[in-house]
Length: 306
Image 1 (spheres, rainbow, N blue to C red):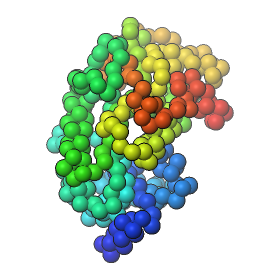
Image 2 (image 1 turned 90 degrees about the horizontal axis):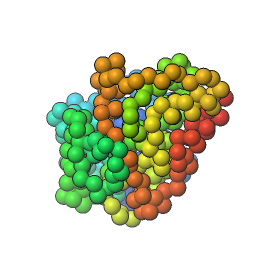
Image 3 (image 1 turned 90 degrees about the vertical axis):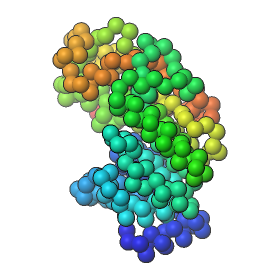
Image 4 (image 1 turned 120 degrees about the vertical axis):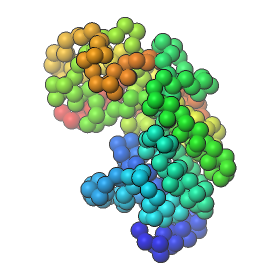
């Protein structure tokens, strides 16, 4: 996107002739939202970390541009200037949020930008020993990764306040959907049923996340932070067993949890357990889950791929 094209895009957006969603990090979740919005005529622009990633985005019908977080991008600056909505799913690094580091001023100055959504994690609540948390619960991140996310949340909200932009934070649990679920791991023979007493996780089907983000795009600003999660936090071994039952194959054997036999990333998920309330999203965004538990979600995935 050159500067003359960006200038024309700004004029069109400000005039209200179209709406443009810029997804900084057009990955699995953002693509689910993009597919939901495309039939309504929204222009979808997304970033990838590489040229090859941009080619894949183009093949899916999106406009792609490269942003690897290492430096300011003139192309991304132009896309920000013409955007009406921005969704950010880029992870912070040791130096903070790379989008804000390189494009804070572009975001603040964007004339037609109505909404910024930032995808964070329920990991900011830390370990709660299985207790329920909601958006009024004081965050207490236990890992460096989650501490970075909480710091990024604060930075995005400060941008919204200073630039008078609508910024909303969405704290996500484990994300599953077609191609990324217990159905897929059971079929591949890689599923494991690890048992740790009292361990439960919330998860959420990617289509329900997209529905929540869609609702937030068009509703008046009510809250700055939303938890997105399903209705039933459940032990992970139960989810794998249910997937195996749907596929009519024996479930993997139960294994006692042993962090030494897992990657550091996998072990970190088992270091915390909590139950996450989605009541605010339901009340404020009007969210009605298509897949309120893993059972409905896995059944839909198994049926679609059979």
